[in-house]
Image (cartoon, rainbow, N blue to C red; front, side):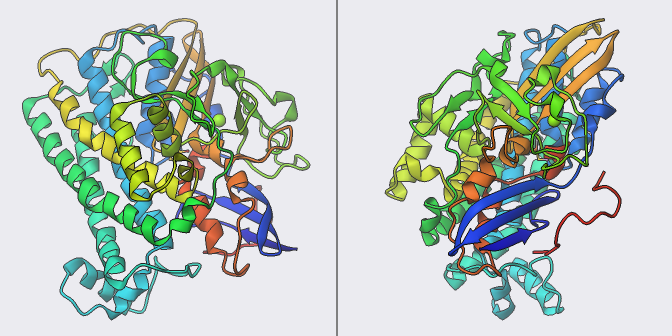
Length: 519
Ligand code: NFE
Ligand code: MG
């Protein structure tokens, strides 16, 4: 029996350690450990509630806008504004969040995950004139292959020209992401860490020239998604089709939905959203969302056990770094006591199972392309395909949203901070279901809890000993060479984990937490 320890897993955000016990070339048991504690929920205590919008965005440099949205929906509700946001404010928020998420999906595929399948070093032999490839070749030619190596050596299967095109797209994707960021900045004033998504609506206003400037960039994103991102995902999926059978995981999915299509129902769990909300299992029968079923367990996490199993509205962040048996700073969120995967796959499946015709046609045509059944989606490639389909579904629709904006009409409503109140804000962030909960006392934050997508996916075992979503996805994986476990990182990266978000200090000063192998 061998042990594979990857610490940290690179080409993700933050410090994730993955430990797999391997027997006869198959992963028997996996452990996912978040190796950071940050304590944002404690930082928020006793502050002005409006600070939540500013501070929670600092949880993460990648998905800051998603935290702006969750915290603001949370405060809208606590301030009694959930059904009062003007359409302009609602639509500008949707556009900012949607554009942010599309560039984030492009980031994940090209700059983090695709390098598991694309052999970038082949470019060293390139003799053509493509400027992007020439710039990468020159970079490699200087003798420094970083950031592309060291790496686990994959079983690279793409034809040379497809490989080279994907590498050129690595560079192009940087430029397209910049356009996405520019579009978000046009709508929200600045990026990252916007100040204009606020309780009551938006402080930025739509103008004709702003709409035109965003539309121009949106069209470039849409063109890239249609003609580059989706075809590249399909090319990778075609060459590595065995990965439709790898990394299935728990097959329970949870989505909070995203992008409010109306703003009059104060209950976020029943809102009509562009991506539908709810839970489902492998039978693809959509169940309505019931937030009372969310708990966080901590038996295997470095938090005091007396606070295990609480609903986030009464959740506690009580670190205990010397807790026996624990192996992660990530808590173990559960829905109805069960492990659930969150993310674009959950989002796409929920919207598909809810009967949305646009999503049905996207998913069915993708499955027909591969002559596959929906169960193939429970896999590494299913996650990559769902992320790309989610980007397409958004970029196909956001042009219409832009044209719904009404220059000159209000974007926010005024409000007073209540003495006492409770609230929650839920949204599907780029990596999945994101929830913020607040309790306000004497106009200050008494408690604040964030339960974040990667907390769901990278969670350790719960109080009953059931492994988390990534742990389950790794279990049963065949590893050809324990010293080069590329199969494991392919599975982990398919979840697009973000550890900064998941653990919301570093390890106790200088203590050795594990063997370090950097790949
Ligand atoms: Ni730090 Fe995040 C997203 C949130 S993830 S990237 O998307 O919320 O866990
Ligand atoms: Mg938390």
